[in-house]
Amino acid sequence: MQSMLQIAQEAISQIPLQRRLRDDDHEIIQRHHQELLALGPAVAQSFEEVLYSQLTSGAGMPRESLERWWRRTIDGPLGDDYFSRMAFTGLVHVTQGVTNPMMLAMSDHVVQLVADAAASFQPSDAERRELLAAVGRVAGTVRAVVAWSYEQAVSAALYEVAGIPAALLTRLRDQEVTAVLGKARAELGTLGT
Ligand code: HEM
Image (tube, rainbow, N blue to C red; front, side, top):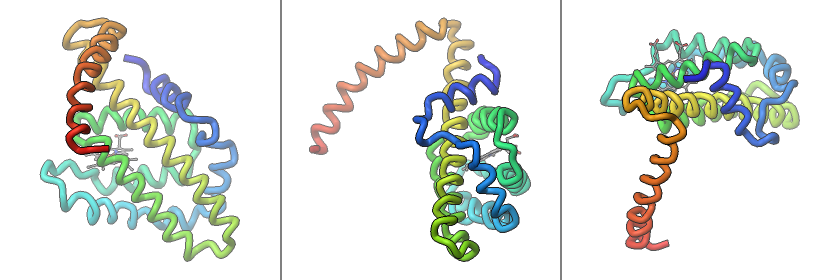
């Protein structure tokens, strides 16, 4: 398996240029450092209210882990170390039974929380738009890295277990998925288009 940094870079390289993190995104976030940092407890609380009450697995992210992640995200820097840690998070999530749909939905929820809060702490529309665009690109990059590393970790584990070379595994996967596609088409046919 590649290093966490390689996985993070690979994920980021797949993000369209318009949606990539920009050099000044961190600076825009810094202009609202105090207000954003103060959202930490609300972010942690919202995980509990929105998601954990519905989980049967009990795989909730500990409050201090969440608050640490939030602080690190707002403080920056959002460079190689930060995104390597996000790649590491994908692996942690695999072992904790945290699925990508859970992670993606909660990331979306966090962005919404910032948008709602920004309405009260930022009087200028232009500045608020800039801030939310920057936060959106950070969240999008985090999601891409966590989801990609999750997928890479699962493939690498299968490769290790089955002893099948990665390229062959990919070819076999595509073959199998092509076969499943036929069934999926039939299923959609019954649902209508
Ligand atoms: C916005 C989406 C999310 C982000 C950015 C995120 C980020 C993180 C980070 C940074 C860690 C710590 C990894 C490390 O040790 O360095 C972590 C661990 C963990 N996350 Fe998430 N996570 C997200 C969503 C979720 C969700 C939805 C769940 C539960 C359903 C979850 C459950 C966990 C658990 C159980 C751990 C292990 C914590 C520990 O052992 O201390 N995460 N996550």
